[in-house]
Length: 480
Image (cartoon, rainbow, N blue to C red; front, side, top):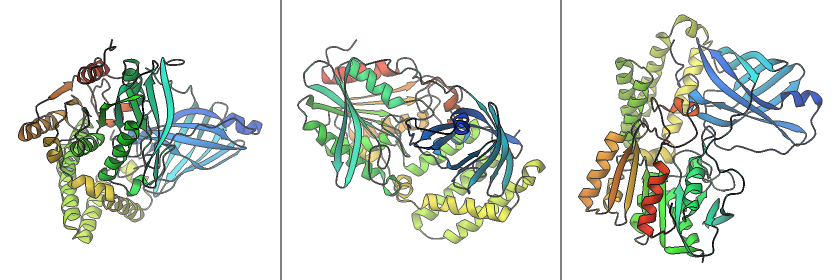
């Protein structure tokens, strides 16, 4: 059975999980509150979903996770419940997704429609997954909610400090691409919370903060670029240097994924940065990274060679058009032709589920073209990190995941080593973590659709390696 393609059901990723306080709901509404797990059946395949309904004042709030689309915490709208009928909607890239169902005890069944697609959905009440490898109870260190300013943008975060009085080395955590909260949370896995917890238990202060427009931070991530995120980190450094409980000579940065682009930009401009840790940091231009990512993910997903070649050729045309800023109408025509070809190659059952091909095609192509024209994508696609990497004068630890399909280890390890040697960077360590994916979880394939299925913890030795390396560079005495 073919997997459903993102061209048919691409949903906008959101990372804003809202915690609600209990209030008065009707007895009927109380039946809907809770965690539900099930599937959307569409185009001959099943798409797993998880829905959480929580009270908000005298009404209801709900979010949905769609692991196969790498989407988590998407807010559902227009939640209506008049026993036994249930209705909710999801604003998404290819058009409004509408769920109309009937509740029967601990199950909900009904119809699903989106743009020109029609299908069904089922949900069953379930226990909410518990995040693993998180500190239990009150941790043995101090936690402080902090804010700092970058112009008119307020960035909100958490500063964790060892319990004893003193001035401690500090690390600033820099998130990857897309809207991320301070824990860099994805499918209940909280990488930055776990890193902060382990480092702080071992004598290193950690500052982690919500991205622009996420959680407690203001600003608009949609109109920002990697360069803007670098200025956010610069203000975080300034904030820490003003504190008496921070050893200002030993402030460093830890960047994951796109954060691995940001960290060298900041350290290259500020020679007082004490250390740089790059977690799955790209060593090539964004367009090269995206092409490699697309190829790896499609191969892992079982796509045939012809499909892979076709998709890569189209992606190259997108980049060429973006760089020249000419030929957009020609590109649109080619994308529409490719879309129709993909529709024609679908099994009959899947083709029948599409009620209006023209409408769907326009929606998908419009969304794709709008995405590549954003300031962030324009910057990312053409930014070459090699010059910034080659200019680093501070100690660098670079870690990659052996099975990473988003920032492939073999390609980027060598590119980073070449950049370091070209610039004469002397103090660097590069290591590939065995069986690790892009999030440094123990993985089987490394593909993004595997993330929600994995244990919510890092591969063995990951936290210990980072901590011992920073301790050695900063003189921390109490590392276990």
